[in-house]
Image (cartoon, rainbow, N blue to C red):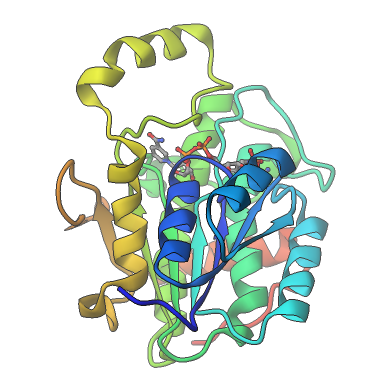
Amino acid sequence: MNLTGKTALVTGGTSGIGRQVALTLAAQGASVVIVGRDAAKAAAIMRQQSGIDFLPADLSEMAQVRALARQFAAGHGALHYLIHSAGIHQNDRALTSDGIEYNFAANYLNKFLLTNLLRPLMPPGGRIVAVGSPYVFNPKQFFRFTGIYRDRPPLPFWSLVKSGMAVSVWTAELARCLAGSGLTINTVVPGVVRTDILQHDPWPVQLLDRLLRPFVSLSVEQGSTGPLYLATAPELARTNGRFYKNQRRGNPVPTQVPAGTYNAGLGQQLWSFSEELVGGRGAPHVG
Ligand SMILES: NC(=O)c1ccc[n+]([C@@H]2O[C@H](COP(=O)([O-])OP(=O)(O)OC[C@H]3O[C@@H](n4cnc5c(N)ncnc54)[C@H](OP(=O)(O)O)[C@@H]3O)[C@@H](O)[C@H]2O)c1
């Protein structure tokens, strides 16, 4: 595919799935901006492939997300592919300097804010892609948006689950808002991919991962097919608000999130709560 003239921003482009997505898009001619914290990793990627620039940002800090959006807008006229691949497993109880639970900020809230800030730069046909997590449970039982993230961080793994659920609810709500705009949002769950994502997990998890990896996990190339497909496949030009899961071979296939994961009321509740967390300036919510 020839992507000359297209511009992509890939968060998490310094490592793992996002890195492979960035390399592939740039090899196909796109102008790619990768976002992460590790400048050394970014420099190595830029040496490997032309057409890639780096904008550093800690995406758990909303001021840095805003600065990132400003920097991107100052240097680029249009954004065709916004690919959210940054993510982390933060197992310690931690709050960001904004007072937001760390997983919620690093895995979900930056997606909300960055997308809202960059949407005005996206022309019709622009695609937003989120690399999601499999942690989707029925929020009627488990999800309480307000209060919990800022003031009383929940158990670490539980906060990871909640950040994954938030991405799913946000995907559905944003898709509803984008209907008719010419922009789309879709999310892919990559499967178990051999990346650095478990580097902060407790040692038993890491040991299990190392033992099982050869048998159950996907290569980074296989893990990147999902976001690449959602971003560029011509047949998905009008597909909006869908969830996909990767396969070991071939393109990802559509999947359903469990019933009850989303309803418009819940979507609006998450949107309002997210706006409150980012300071009420998260921008357009239509419909
Ligand atoms: N690998 C899997 O099996 C798997 C399964 C399900 C879902 N996922 C999801 O897939 C996505 C990609 O993960 P991966 O497997 O490719 O992991 P990875 O190799 O650890 O890459 C994670 C990326 O996120 C960036 N990142 C993390 N925290 C950040 C922060 N606070 N600010 C800015 N950038 C940050 C890292 O950049 P720096 O190091 O430069 O900060 C890195 O580029 C994640 O959303 C993850 O949850 C992965």
